[in-house]
Length: 141
Image 1 (tube, one colour):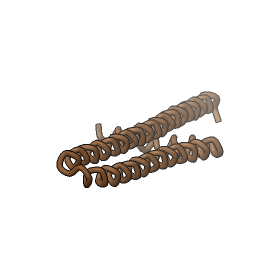
Image 2: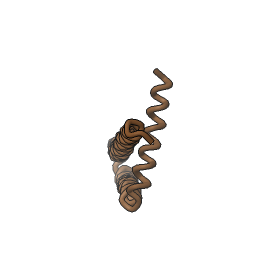
Image 3: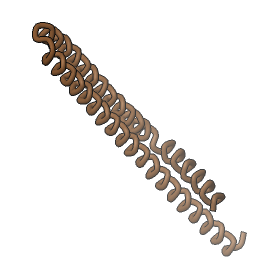
């Protein structure tokens, strides 16, 4: 094989390697953004749960005030019942929030663990994803 042909093939191979590395980095960045986006959505869900628990407690307190104004003795009984229910609901909401956060954290750790356990496979997957996205984007333009 002539030197110029061999040099051309080596340059082409290096270019393909650089393209694959770029695609792998792009894919890793996309995966990282996906993880960050999932974490943001988990945080937003947690905030929504917290707000919903606050709304439930606030609604229960409003109802308690109405009962207290009309019926003194019955109001005391109703207040105790509503407080207990609101506390139980708040505790359940907090447990659900904590479970959701823990689950999201576990998913993130699982993904990170798999990436760390199989870095080459992860890079190849990221490269494949990056290549697929690149091809998709090129067809759309």
